[in-house]
Length: 139
Image 1 (cartoon, one colour):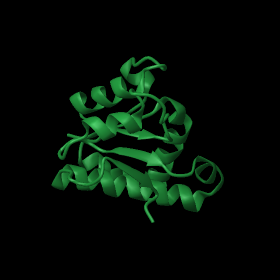
Image 2 (cartoon, helix red, strand yellow; image 1 turned 135 degrees about the horizontal axis):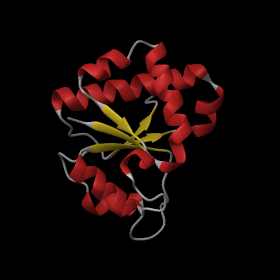
Image 3 (tube, helix red, strand yellow; image 1 turned 135 degrees about the vertical axis):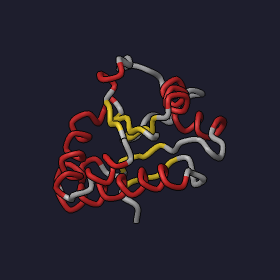
Image 4 (tube, one colour; image 1 turned 30 degrees about the vertical axis):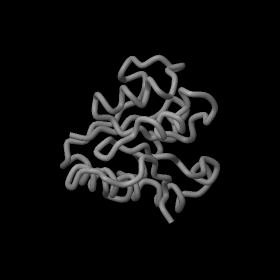
């Protein structure tokens, strides 16, 4: 079973995306996959968890991370972690491509929600062999 975890900086955005999934009638598809969605608070994760530790947690526990863009600086950044630790079969990181557009455009938010639903469905049905990070919405 694949799960979807909202990064600490996207808690409100995540709730809005879930509302858009409902409005687009995509929630039923995800429910049929027994997909669980959670926030840091739901899992008792510390808000200041570093990128490497978070990515490792997500891989061990089966969570797909939905983030805006974690830092790129230092050996424990998400970029460094993906570069040196990601292997085929690991879960991807879904990255919101443009937080501002997501906040101000329902059409853009709907594209994000649709892509997230499609990606989670594909993960559940076929597994994963693509790049470690996927920006949503996809082009």
